[in-house]
Amino acid sequence: MLRSHLLRPSLSTVSFSPSPRSLIKPLLSFPNSQYATMCSYTASSSGLSSKLLFRQLFEKESSTYTYLLADVSHPDKPALLIDPVDRTVNRDLSLVKELGLKLIYALNTHVHADHVTGTGLIKTKAPGVKSIISKASNSKADLLIEAGDKIRFGDLFLEVALILLVRATPGHTLGCVTYVTGDGADQPQPRMAFTGDALLIRGCGRTDFQGGSSHQLYQSVHSQIFSLPKDTLVYPAHDYKGFTVSTVGEEMLYNPRLTKDQETFKSIMENLNLPYPKMIDIAVPANMVCGLQDLSVKPVEALSNQK
Image 1 (cartoon, rainbow, N blue to C red):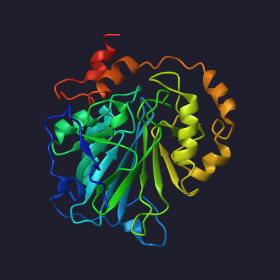
Image 2: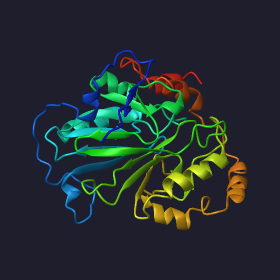
Image 3: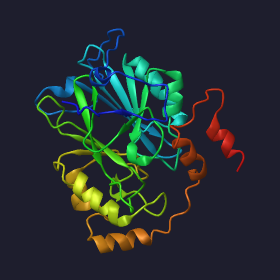
Image 4: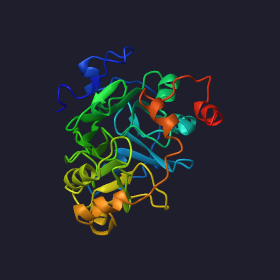
């Protein structure tokens, strides 16, 4: 069952005032479609491969993965997007339409510094969609979530595992979350963890800006992600080496940073000497207010020209 405070409206967003029941079981209506060959997710022998439609999408400029999930066994075919990018909103919405889905949520794992989130444009082009981000991020969205909340779409749901605890010394950024598919018998197996920048494939997010803390990141990954079943599929927000998916077990064995003890990890993170993110001064302010909203402007290109 969903907690009563499952998805809490942001006080800063006045355009959304759902009833509690609409969050639990969205009442949607759209045409039936055929999905016989549409599910790219391989489930266990429980036969749930026909239940979850899953797509991993890529934005090359920021090397960002966007994830599309939908319950295609539900009459309404409800869907959600995780970490959409403004540059690829038209692609994503076209795919949703082609597959006959009804997009209800656009989620961010954290306030991104390397690209502008697509949630603002999505909300403008598809007004029924609600944006979601963690309450701890201190940013604006229609719905603010915390650790332990569940985001339901059809008969499927995502747990919200807080990757960076809200303390004085957060990890990659303030308010990062990982979205994890459910563990019930009626949920797809193996489980899937959408880890944002907290855990990358054979790496992790940097901790030298936006309130980062290597200590907090190490503790968060080990307690919140490495505690999941070892066959849990790991889907990060980025990859720069051509990887698409890993597992919790693989990262526990082979991640060159997070397999080390905490002091060694801290030393590694303090000596990365990474350049200042080129998009941070554009992306962070925009992402703090749910991304860009004006369809008449292409803000990334326009702002880039002012540099």
